[in-house]
Image (cartoon, rainbow, N blue to C red; front, side, top):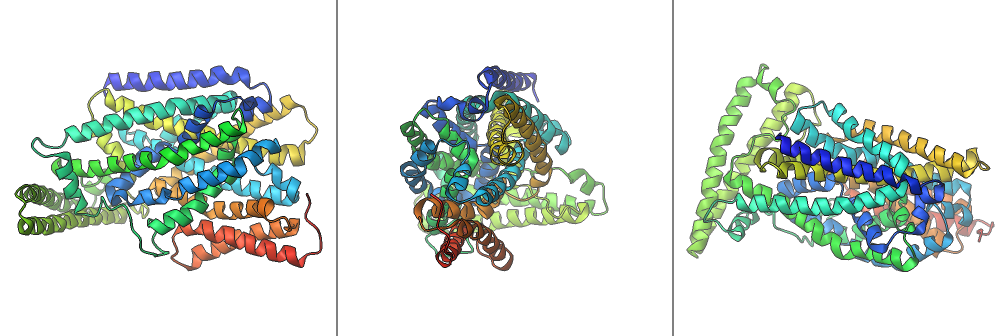
Length: 564
């Protein structure tokens, strides 16, 4: 990598870390450390809410998803506006006026300590794993760019992020998120410009996208009611609404964002910012992945984007087979490029018969390219023994490092790293808040000083930083990272949402009903996951409904009144 790129990366990371440490002066107590004294402006909180989601996973995983599967993933967010409006009317004023540090603190007031502890524990497990998934995305990038060991790259990002979060608190997290959004948008705009300029002279952007559309990559809406399919209109609208209600309404990493706002109205506006802007931003990033696919229609891509085991395959007993696949891949690419050019030429002539023939040939050649790639992946898995080997998360990093001009490489890598550091910091701060306020202060040291809890909070941040870094080494091989992070969350969010529905909307719910309903919800989700092919996005609906049904039934059978 060019020294200019190194300078850009170093300058940006230095700025972020310095600013985070500088803000530690405002964190001399847990109120400032976790809630920033409820003093942050709505626009900063809103950008922080969006930035917590738009991590390095968004840049690496979503672009890879767009390259591999097209625009269908945007349906995943169709429930987001509905969820944000509902939360702005209900939970934002509710939590803000309850004057709590964590969402789970209220559950003890409404039910009992068991329910608070169970909900807090589910959050700690889900977010602790989530930190590892978020951290794994930039580790993938650096492992390619620098040729470093994946474990070392995870430490390079995880250690400094943990340190500045320990000292800076939520103030540092929020203002780092603001910087992150600026750099992400600037980096993505630069990537789109490079991709468009990379389309051959004489080929329009619309013409190139039309070719990509022949593979189904521009198909956005699927109205089929198939519970095994993750990306449909109905799964996004119904399952996505429950997922987003659970994430933004019951996940401490998001609740804590709007608890730092200056007022209830500021908290509401911060959520509504995501309601209006998240889907267009997600569509833009998916479209970037589609444009990478378009770019590689005219410029030969590597047969495999993840070179992790390539040297071992070339040196092994099946090296000749791998070389033969490379030769076939080159020929298939040339055939596909020729078919794409024929399709464009036929479309210009408005010759529908010729367009149909060219489209058919293009689809056939694209299937051949995909088939060869699949065979190469199978070969790598067989030779290396790495059955989880995948390369969807390596598509965009490979494009950055091999096709982007000097200077922009540094900007894009800085965007990926900064996105990861900001999102990880937000999660670590929330994990620390729940660990200390819901467990340590509640059950271990209820009468300690504020300075003691602040010290304990910093130690908790360090612990979760180590845990997340360790899990990151496993998460990189779980498939598309953007799917992984939402799959992990979907195991928990529906059940958490269900217990909050019982707490707020069902006055007759008893403490026993809420606690056993929460456990029943998690059990039902586990059983569905183990025995069916239902898509994970529906786990959010299943978990919430199971908790409400079981919790209400047990409450009606119980004679003990609910605590108010």
